[in-house]
Image 1 (cartoon, rainbow, N blue to C red):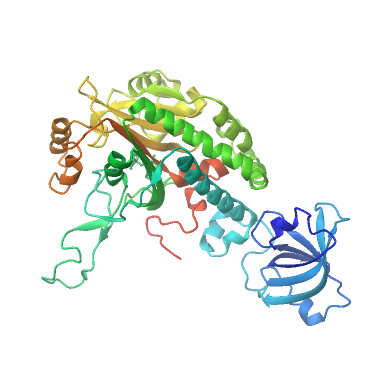
Image 2 (cartoon, rainbow, N blue to C red):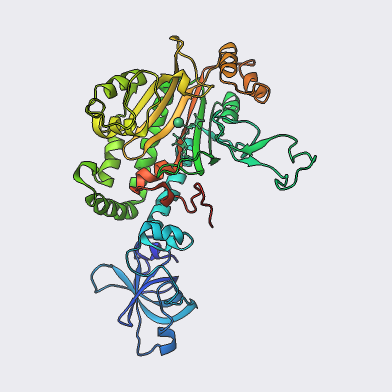
Length: 466
Ligand code: 4AD
Ligand code: MG
């Protein structure tokens, strides 16, 4: 029986068996045992006079134990139940001189170097439980709303975003030049997005979504970028951009509401952690809300919807722009927004999540639907405080001639994407979708500040350990 279930109290005054890892052992008497099922430790009270010295000596932080004893209401403060130990076995010892996760506060940077053990800390265990709950919430949301999950390929021959940030997949030995043909007989890479394949399935199943790993060889060593991350990509036939914005907003609100309901213990812990981290920052940089407070705020309030053109006006007239505080001042319509601009819009101007839409065609991907003005496309980005871009999506260009013209103008390989243009030949229709970076969602939901701390084993430039 796991500790989370024991805390429900149904087995009170009964003999129970628990297995877990020692967090602390105090006064030769009190073991705080954790099995990962929940944040709280189970206090196990040892009768040290009846326990052989060599066993007591092995009860060190990190050791795996099996404890058998009576589950009773606790007299002590801090916990409702405890176990009076009748027998105890050390399943796996842990040398206290070598085990790095000691019961004290370790820095996140230190713990990144020990990524195989960091999940044995309260913070990482809480983050990873919330991550798992969010993942489940994603599948629940789509299943409840009539979407089918599709498993799009991880190895592809196309560059869905046309940005050239791909990892090659090859069986050829790069150290020998040979005439051998490569495994697939053509150049292949790890996918940067499942969107194009998802579109083909939306045009048959109607409402689909993908949830899989994506890979980007962009050399941005920031706290928001990973080289390997998980993306959720819904795609819906007959949905236009407004429907797409509605879906993104409803989806985000729904999964956040789900974890607020189901991860109360972990989120309360992370809320306290968040507040103490924020308190260390200068006043002007602090989040105006606590973690739980801002999650509730997001769920209860409408996201602001603003066109790119209006956003540029707001930014151009903003104080930091006039006082030349932006590293990249906004001079003219058409520039791509930097994260400093996105942050100004969400954190200072609107103080809420914002959906920007109708971006200049020149700064967006080839597949987005051209507006009648001939210069903007039906794109949307959902921006969040602290995180920046959480979602990127669009209505897709469903008109064959327009799509082909865009592909040619942007030097996209039409031959490779013959099947994608085919969709516009046979039963084409308005459709749209978006991609949500799962780690950015976890980052926001847990109040962590570095994306490397919300995925078990982060892959970033010059780092692929574990
Ligand atoms: O905006 P992006 O590049 O959009 C697409 O890939 C579209 N094909 C999605 C679609 O319309 N189906 O990426 C989508 C999201 C971003 O908004 C961001 O949250 C996340 O993926 N993302 C990253 N997350 C972590 N590390 C990176 N390097 C990321 N690049 C994008
Ligand atoms: Mg984007």
